[in-house]
Image (cartoon, rainbow, N blue to C red; front, side, top):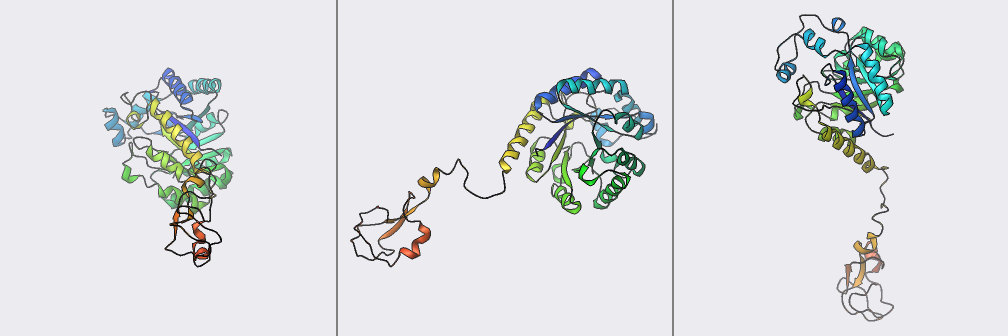
Length: 330
């Protein structure tokens, strides 16, 4: 199966459905599998006094409550239905992360995969609610450790979601993530520990890390994107612009092909090179019939087609059955 690539629009529509549709258009052109948003009712998500994360203040240059910021970015359920229909018309998978259980119920009929954000990794009632929906689940694990993941998995499965329908994403929730904090090997640890499909949700700058994750076995990649990094909003600066998103998808698809079958053998393209590049046992000088072959009158040179140098020890000490001129294959 090919890597499932999610273009994370998130809140980069800035609360404008027309911008959201432009983001869908960009996702379609990039060749990703799905475009994902975030769905919430602000009054069900945060208290009015909840503070912004430092990165949100830095990126928006506006110090306000989380409530006020999220209220500005919130899209209505009616608008999400319109976005779902728009995705269907463009033949791309619509996804949205429900940030609370009421929105999860709303999204039930709109999508077959539920992405759980890192913030809900330790939210038992929410995890149980999602688990009862018995849909496919993609679980992000930013800010978590192995015990947190173990607990969340147990809750999801006890509620009714099958393990085979769960993919766990390694993630770091800092926007942008410092490269030294990525710890991609932890992604593989997750997969081995729980014997489960794994992937990576990336918040670094650039496209190298998700490409590396694919080379390490990620089956799902999620990456934020935007129309323009200079737009106002909390996530734009750590997002890819359209040309970068397209380049990431192309690179991931190339890596998928390059990973191959795991069987070590000559490829079809290199078989013709065997005759040219490999070597044979060759006379290093004139050799008379009956003369003994030795390290003094034999050498290894290109091309192949004669006796393989791997049989050198067999040839040394035997007698020539004919005359050989210099550079003639034995």
